[in-house]
Length: 224
Image (cartoon, rainbow, N blue to C red; front, side, top):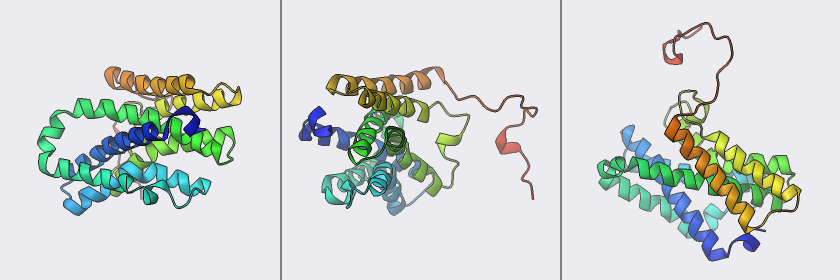
């Protein structure tokens, strides 16, 4: 199905662009955490490939693409070198990096959903794996860096919701036999634009109703 929507060369190029931008975000976090070059490379690889690797293992697409395509493995290393030597300059273009990251989010949630469906999963499960493809690497990155995953923090702009919307749109298109290059591209663009709007206007998911405490989570005492 993916081959019917995009040519293999276009699909591969888009994958590598998304992998590179995700790897940049992982490498930058490693620099902020004062990791050495090996730690930077590990976070770059995990951020870029973690979501797709998990998806492929779940659906039985083995060996995963991350291990059969050398470009998938080398691209995060290229991002590692860039950040290792030029991280101050990369930090200064963080806005541009975030924009490309949003594009990668939209692309991966759609591609992940389609690939999971191709391997026989139902629509709901396929959409779930589409979400995982898009955000799984970021969750692993934060866990390895000893941080609460950004995906779970109320004080971060919406990230998972745009991916959920993109994956759900693809599932609906499959359900009604309307998946084609145009509708799949619209799903990518929808997730991309939602993420950009969330960053621009700082949209955040609601917390539990009737919260009595105004103390932030970081200030709450640790219970025995």
